[in-house]
Image (cartoon, rainbow, N blue to C red):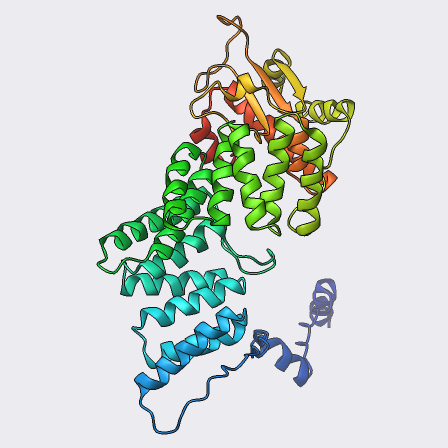
Length: 422
C-alpha cells in the first residue's frame, strides 16, 4: 500500500504532462490563396493608331503599268506641292515610292512634303534615301540643303530636328556639292545654280562667315539678276560686316523687290538705326513685326537698374572662387556694341551680338594681370530683341553672362560650344 502511494506521489510531483497543441487547420480557400502563384499584371494595351490621310487626287487610268502609274503620281505630287497641299502631295509621292522604291524623285518629293508639314525626322529619312540613291542629284541637293539651313516652316510642337551649327555646316556642304554638280552639267540651269548659291550665302551668314557669303551672293545675282532673297543675303552680309551704308542700299532694293518680306524690313531697320536714323529704323522694325507677328516680337526692354539686378542675381549663385573672380571684373551694360569692339576681330563681330568679353581668349585671367584688365559687356537692346518674354530675357541674360565668364576663365568659343554654352 505504501509502495503504491509512493508511486502515486512521484507521479503527482511530476504534474500532468502538457498536451501538444493541435495543428491549426486552415480553411481550404485560405490555403489555396496562399499557395496560388501571383498573377502577373497585364501590360496596358496601347491604343490603336490610325492616322488620317489626305488622299492623292490623281486619277489613274485603268490598265496602265506601274511606271505610268508612278509617273502620274509624281506629276500630281509636284502639282500639290505647288498648291501648298502638302498632305496630299505626300500621299501622291509615297504611293509613287511604293511602286518605284528606287525613284530619287519620289523620295525627294516625300521629303519635301514631310518637311513642309513639320515632320522633320521622317523628312530626314526620305531625303537621306534620295541622296543614297543619287548623291549628286542637284535638285535633291538643293532641297536637302534648304532643309538643313532653313529648317521647318512650322511650329516647334512637331517632331522637328534641331537646326544647329552642325545642321548649317551639313546644309552648306550639300549646297556646295550641288553647285559643283550644276557647273559640271552639260545642260546649264542658271536658276538652279542661283538657288544653290543663295543657300550657300545663307549658311555662311549664319555661320559668321559673311565675308565669304558676299562672293556667293554675287554669283547668284549674276545668274539671276533682281532676286530678292539674294539681295537680302547681300544686305545681311554687309550689315554683319558693319558696312552699313552699303547694306542700306542692298536692303532697300530687297524690300522693293519683296515688300512683304518681314526679315528684309527687320535688317533694314537695324541698319538704319546703326546709321543714326533711329526714327526710320523704328518704322522698318514696326513693319517687320506687322508682317510676321508670330515669328518676330517686340523688344522686351527693361531699365538699366533692373538689368543690373538680373546680373547680380546670377552672380549671387556662383561659388566663392568664381564669385570673387567675377566681382573683380568690370561688367558693363551698353545698349548696342561699340564699333571699335566689333572691329577688334577679322571678320568683325556682327552688330547683333549679345555680349562681349574684352580680354585674351583661351587663357584664364589672373590677378594681378598684365596690361588692361579684362571686362565684360552685355548689350541691353540686343538682348531685348533676342527674346519674346520677360522670363526668356532673364534666361538669356544669365546664359550670356555665363558665356562671357567662360571666356574670363580661359574657354574659347569651341570650348563653350562643347559645353552647350554657345
